[in-house]
Length: 228
Length: 228
DNA sequence: ACACGGATGAGAACAGTGTTCTCGAATGAG
DNA sequence: CTCATTCGAGAACACTGTTCTCATCCGTGT
Image (cartoon, rainbow over all chains, first blue to last red; front, side):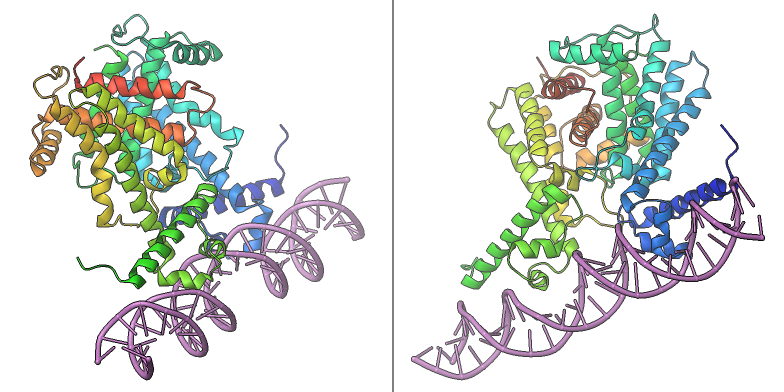
């Protein structure tokens, strides 16, 4: 890695600034982001933006990647702040961090967990940060091996078991299929509740939002067999 | 109810046709629906659309309402086709119907369960059909009163209990707070799994989609205490 | 049966959009 | 100190939603 040239530095600063302004607009205008409006805010002509992003889609993609990374960072940091053997504490901390980030950045959250634009293929750069949250949950459960409560209830069908086996093998995981299955259930549920809350589906239904969320996370911890 | 005049009839037919074409466009272009493109498909000039819908938003709203109603109708029909006392059969039928509709109409599904456009207030016409699915689930569970398995695990906190009590009272429901809570969990989860599947979050993860979905629905039936 | 009036669609216009291209000017690199 | 690369401006093009005005049509009330 050679030292970045001055030009490269100011260029990347400009890219960051464009994204910052775009994020601000996103918060008020949602996904209908206007390049010209962003340019105006930067005292720049719209075509100048094309020196930094080849298209509007590219800018949105950059914002999406940033959002994934920010969300993953918040979750990771929250997990790291809890003693390793406090599994339920870590579990709840991750959930709360994801929720806090989502509520603080609803537009960006909608960008990554709302309906994707059709025929938009998620670039490879998004898959790793996108997987981060569930990997955190897997890690927490894996750290509890030996202490986990047994899983009762319906056995998995073979095709499903095969999918889970493959996922475990791909990452050299240590969980059993049944256990990973429960983590997937919890992961699904985490974003299910969050979508409902962020997208307004709980309006006029649930007032005690934070308690509602914690309750669901606890239930999922139970279902996954987290001890205590 | 007087007989609708001829003019009113052709007018409503034209409205339906506009929505049909718009739905077709929605499927390929997603939420960026172009009025002019719709008009072209109808051999009509764009401004003529304004005789039928006062704005693009109004057309989208109409599509949203239709989507809610279609989804609710599919779910209701599926429930009605199963013997009343086969609770788990009805439960699964509703879930599968919702999933089938969502997979058959991903764009419309995204319209109603994806990220809402900011500052877009859901018109009153949407709340009733939007609530239909959860009401079906509540009905199924209510039909099982006396046969339901007891709910174990963490008691509800007071604020949450109050929210649930209010929801029950509003509709003169017969469920206990704990039971309604579980129905809400199941409802949340239903759309959580579906969002993940429809929005592509299961790509390269789960191949056995139908089994995955059924498995989650069954787990939720267990959690809710549905007998058998 | 007939004239009337309201409903309908065409077309032009306006403001706004993403994107491409060309052209000076600046400025870091050799 | 020159030169090539990078940058931003500006015009242009093909779109978009929306508003007006203007004929034309045709069901309706008499």
